[in-house]
Length: 441
Image 1 (tube, rainbow, N blue to C red):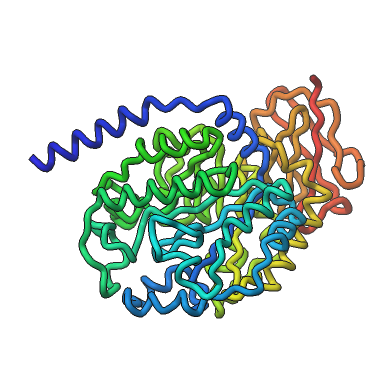
Image 2: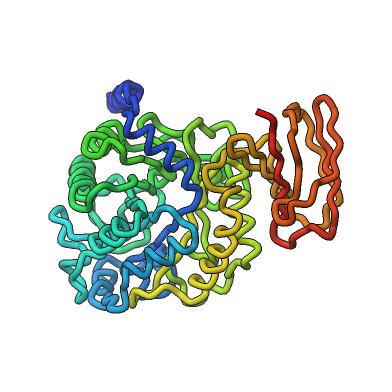
């Protein structure tokens, strides 16, 4: 009987989601999002105190009683939301996504649904999201809220999923109460902070079967149709995305990829190329190796790596959401600030080839990608040792081809369906050589 009950719930969920039709405001927001191309991800919480990443509760199997002591040490007196927003804006970013509640269950905002939040449990006692929302509004930066569907702290997150099972003190509760709790918190996030860009869900994968290669059937009902309808009803233009690594669910407005370009498949949890939908795309990546502050993280990416990843993301038709993990005192690491400053200098000159672009006609690869803005095609050459590139199935009518930096004409050969571009080493750039093709209207 139980088996048939879950089948019926699944069918009802599909029917409910299938009825979703995005509003005019939502479609306009999707277009804005697809044009924005670059955003700042912020992983920040009481876990930052331990300097061992945002999964420290799970990785060190810290008990509930032990973890509850952490908020008492969280007092970010150096937190300056306007400084954060201006840092993002000067880097060329158009939006910010911040963790409102991560897997540890601690809310980084004032919440009537739970006392386990930054206002009630920390000496800081202020709503950092409220302050950030005001700064974003002042400087025309859209604000998205990351929200974890997974919770290692609340008893009502039961049945438990695949993670956090070594944490002592987790009790057994009522799943429906957990769903209601999430609805209450999401309502707070959608009503107390002005217009927001959207909700960035994470954690659904915790309740999926996993064979080490691909996520299988889901074992609980997250009531996605009800939760997604709630979000779209309160703020019709708010976008919904979920980091579940599968094909988009009905009701979602953009599709994200974690540390993996769309269809690239470099991670064991990567979304299959067959599961890429027709929604706006977003890739999230770290500046170093960790999402949350990690004192011993030495995997800082170079200027070249970061800029080329932004270019590649655009070449795959995707935004880049680049992460920083602030320290527990509210400051962002100097290395991260310097990296963002370098990206900002690059994008101030070359942003025209990234913003408002769509995936170009050249199939992206590690050596070069292409973007398209109206009648302009920009070929970004990432390997400065290349002497020529050949593009098959290219039947566009070319008006001119030149190097973006120097205005020097490019030597090329065009046949009926292909294009060969011969490169001049004197015009090559170590990070990105941009070839600008202007097409006849």
